[in-house]
Image: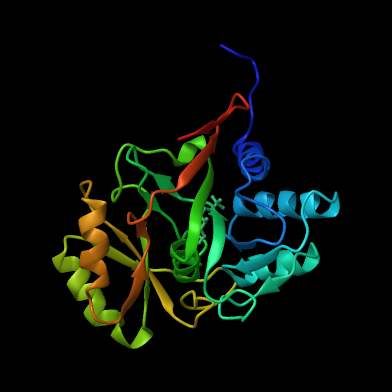
Length: 242
Ligand code: 5RP
């Protein structure tokens, strides 16, 4: 037993910062690279650490692609040059992406999208040569589908028909409501979010495909098609890689 006790917020900061340092040591983060930057309270400490390693001269010429308005603003404030994935400097391809997760299964499958940035997060992760996930230990779960609800980004006009089809897949759906905004959350891409939950664990890989086959669904964030490197900080102040 150790008497070090870290809060969840401290674990998030530790995971984000440590992963950046490890990835620099491994030369997976390097000067001149194109990097995808995730969204949320664990990704942001990673963004801050990246900015610090640019400021201390370890890195130069970094070109970032942000997964949300939140991360774009952070990059602007931290002097990290930020581009569209479509910019000619980026060419739709990244060397590495780093992001948080809402749940991590034993086989390394994820649920993401708690911050409603799922569509751009998935596009960025799948167009990166390497993908790293940073998380606190509360994100590790035995199975997916019954705990953190699966975020699904949808075209507003298809809301009712999509809910009907998701119910046929055994799910219960909640339209995500805004906070300090009347009505539903509207994503950075102008769409709505359904939070979707099952009573029993599901086969995430099969369900990722089944949900995405529904007309009007833009994407869901069961993340099963690409194995990430995963850095998990726990309450003892240790960062474990899995
Ligand atoms: C945002 C995400 C986040 O990475 C995920 O929700 C984890 O967030 P946090 O690190 O704040 O717990 O997918 O859409």
